[in-house]
Structures are given as structure tokens and as C-alpha cells.
Image (cartoon, rainbow, N blue to C red):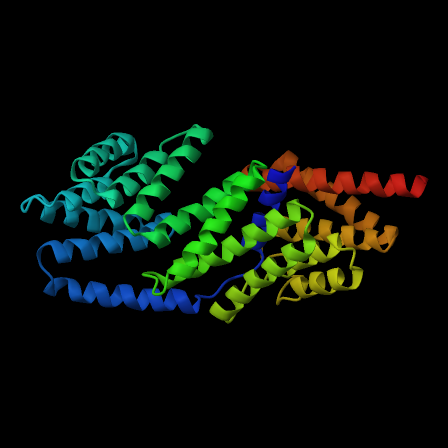
Length: 354
């Protein structure tokens, strides 16, 4: 149930709001533009290291940047071989590896990293190797190895970024003590980072680490502490983005658990108060419907059962249609949405019987 709950939250958070480019993203974009303009004047290892940094930047982005990684990867490889620059050769091998050869190329780069004792190369080789693994448990163990390598290499931000998502892996598996340890280590790491190489990655990693802490305390039943961390999450994003996605739904959920009806309803309504909400062509409809399950829960707190039942019955019909006629994330949303609505509806009927 915990894993499904996390999946539902990601559906809602990622689908309801169109997000403008943040302050930190614009700052990084300008930094990358300037770096590329300087490349023609650079030579040798310094030029190669700058291109390695470009590949790192693009690796944080979507798959649409694979062409850029391949482009600079080929340059890195071609310029490193004549001068025997082992780090460049290893990173070029990783950046240019086709999917069918990723495991082989990752192990090849790992051998170079081991021979030269280059922790950064070993970290990246481990990351690429992990992307080829199907065993979740092995992937988790190897992810920790990659984090250790990056920390030893002084790549604290990259380690923190990976640790943020490792924390979520533990959360989804219900391993909350391990998740807390990951999040705690991340918060300590962020204190040490004074001038992050990529401000947007620092901001997003910090934001999601706060969110992780909120979820961890919520799972432990400490809703006051959970509320503090989700408010920190919201504060970080609002400071970085003039049009933030906002975390009002998360805040509403915590107030619901604290049995504070007025606050829960206030933040749910603020979550809904965005342009075009009622436009059926705007946003991802399953995400909006999932958030109405939470509204039904709020109404239940105040024994407004008629309103809650109306919402839940409508949602069950909708989510059932997703199960029957869709695939992928739509079907996943249908599965979770119908289950959650059915459970809450059953609880309401039990309350009415008593």
C-alpha cells in the first residue's frame, strides 16, 4: 500500500501543473552556454574535462539529451586516445555506449577506473552498469557503491542526487530506517556544498530530500515533524520558481492526519485553485481524479458522508474505465485510484452502519 501511495503522489505532483523554467535552471543553462562558447579556445585535458562536465549536465536531463551526450562523448574519446588520457577514454566509452553494449562498456570503463584509481570513473561506470540490471536488490546495492565512489571523488552533489532517489527506493519498499539514514546523510552533505556546480540539481535534490523526510515522519506517525519538512519543501521550490507546482495537496494530507479539518480543506482548495482546472483538456485527468479521493477523505473527517460518497462512486466508475480500456500509467492510476476509493467508501459504509 505504501508503494502504491508513493506512486499516486508522483502521478499527481508531476501531472497537474505546467512548470516554468526555474531560477536555478536558467542559471545553469547560462553556465553551460558560456562553457560551450569557451570550448574552441581550450586544449588538451582541460578541454576534455569541460566536455565531461557537459555530459554530466546532460545526464541529469531527459532522454532527449542523449544526442548531446553521444556528441560530446565521441569528442572526448577521440581527443583522449591520442594523448593517452585514461579518464577521458573511460568517460568517452561510457558516453558513447549503445544500449546493447552498455554492460560490456561499463565493465571496460570500470577496469580503467580501477587501474588508475579514479573514483569518479568508477562511480559513473557503476551508474551505467546499474541501468542494465533487472534485479532491484542488486541495483540498490550497486547504487550505494556508486554513491560511495562519488563521495570519495569529491563529487558530493552527484552522490547526494543519487542518494535522494535511493531514499525513495527504500521508502517505496517500506524500509523507513534506511530511508531516514539516506535523507539524514543528504542533509549533512548539503550543508557542506557551498558553491554547487549545478544549482538546479542542488535545489531539486534538497527539495526532494525534505519531501523524503516528510514522508518518513508521516509513516512514523509524527505528523507535526512531517508538516515541518513538507513546508520546507514548498519554501525551497517557491524561492526557485515564480510558477511553482506547489505542495498544497501534500500539506492538506498531513493536516487531514492531524485531524485539522479546516486547514486540510483550505490547502486542498488552494491546490485546486489553478488556471484551467475545470478544463477537461488541461492537465492529466487521472491525477486530478486521484486528488479528489483525498477530498473525500477530508469530507469524511467532518462526517459529510454524502459529499464523500458522491465523489468516491464517481471516481470508482472512472478508475474502473481506466483499468478496462487503458495501459501503462493510466492503468496504474486506475488500479490505485479504484483501490483507494473502494477502501474509503467501505469505511464510510461501516461507519454509517454503526
